[in-house]
Length: 289
Length: 345
Image 1 (tube, chains in turn blue, green):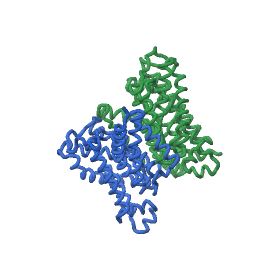
Image 2: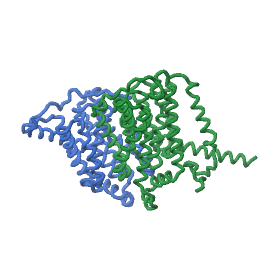
Image 3: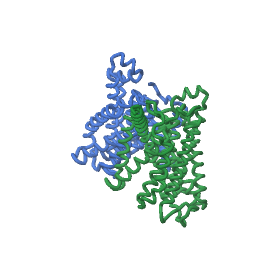
Image 4: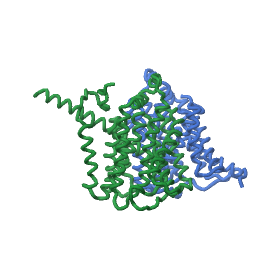
């Protein structure tokens, strides 16, 4: 029963979901790398972007693939506003205040969504991208494939932006040494805003891609963000390629646990992985910043 | 050491003997609370205060670790849950009275806390917070998939004849009121003495600057573990109380992540690292939650938690030391005014 096809099929689905974890983690790691703040509300950003896409579909009839750019724009603004209103006031405050503030945002957004839109599970019934493909004897859902490719491309774009553009390099400079960067004429505050904007825009992409096939509910961000925490730690805090690699590893580990042990325990291995990584190799696999 | 430095967290100004809080206000407040169930007789009013005391106790327990020792845990639901499950399983499967179960629950929580604390105390800041979330999440998943403990469906506690021995009261909630009041009094007394003892100074030293504390010869891990164990013990005891109060436990009511958030939120809102902060936090947040639930919406709309999220953001931005810091600032200003008027006479 447990033949090669099943294992290959499982691995494939693990890799596909892994790219999504990676994209969520990229946003998280970018904000962390640039300003040393963990955005505990990151999963709620994902949830919000999925609802944005859902309501555009339900009220205006827009397909998720059409509303993807809208979701990205909305989330960019959400990220920038979060920085301005919520994060900037606590930049000089003690670490605990920085933790509590994004935590408060998480609690606020998650329960606000439940208040406004009820805890019901929603699904986009008839997306443009639907059905499945057969590749080398393996079946792949088209939405899953599109989501994975979209996540991969976005991650690549973010990486290219950081390494190859002037603005991207300013982000790296601020991550390296904020004061030195400020002396070189880089405005740290503007850079922080940009990091939040791009970090949130990443989940804007992820949310729109997920909305094609995933249920939408107020706590949907929880699993994804926990996996993203693991990915960020495993990949190395601040590293984009690390987040990509780690996302895929976690996706694969998760589905293999589901296959060989029990689907109920599929998250546990990822959590254990987090503990092992932060204790044994806190720098992560590709920690650079 | 002279105890003149101990006016808790006084904000700036020379806060010499402000309002005699400990001497007058505390006994008065305690008397008022002891009389409360006979003045307000509705079950809703009893229920409300039982919840206030429960969350105040939980917040106070969290305060030992998160407030004084500065290790913000977001996994306290795990200790609460194992406390609830330990006593309930002992009762359901072996017929052991919940009072023994309560002690067992506290001890199991301590054991778990040491197991969790030993590895995670090597981590700092965000790493530690995420570790506590992740470990509590593991406990949640394990209990959800543990048939002996009822799995996801949970455990119903047997309805026994009411009485102190059985720790079950059906005709009136007043006994629960006094039990949880006693628990709160005990935790608060423990915190009161910890705050003034060498232990409390070590905790604060670790919170303010772990490296400096270590260089002064404080065994950081050991004292963090002591803080964690104390904190977990009382959290576990509260878990047992909760199980006996609602007579039904499941992973979602006793191990849920939002419960961890709530346990952290109450002391942080009221003022973590202060004796009265968690109590103040519970006295404001729990009634707020109950009243919004009653007047603004039905159950399940989560408007109370939405408000909590907003409040915690505001507190973190405007007064990270919590509401109690505002009170002490006000008190010290009052004394300044008072001294001014006295000098005029």
